[in-house]
Image 1 (tube, rainbow, N blue to C red):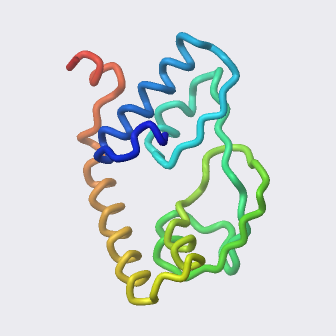
Image 2 (image 1 turned 180 degrees about the vertical axis):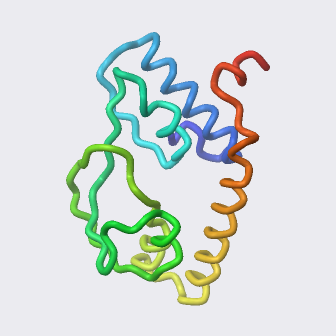
Length: 138
């Protein structure tokens, strides 16, 4: 999804989605497509020719937690550098920022913002268009 770098989140997601659609429907080749756009996972999870995977990690004090709990708690993570089946159960961007040495006050504010954004996006889920509906708009 680096094709969408430098764009808005929605344009980046749209570009990545269109690329996946082209690869699946036209090229039909073996492809490794890495993305941070979690909405693409939902969009392609039922496509028989697509297999979802994620880079595994060990989450100290909470391996089986859901995404919202993981966002709100302070976990230490260890990246295992192995490919696991299925989509990633949560985003660990705040943990990566912690590993990079960002100040605690920045991490705390980022956690708050992440939780707020996630709630806003989940409230807007009913407003989402299907890929077919979006294509009809073009």
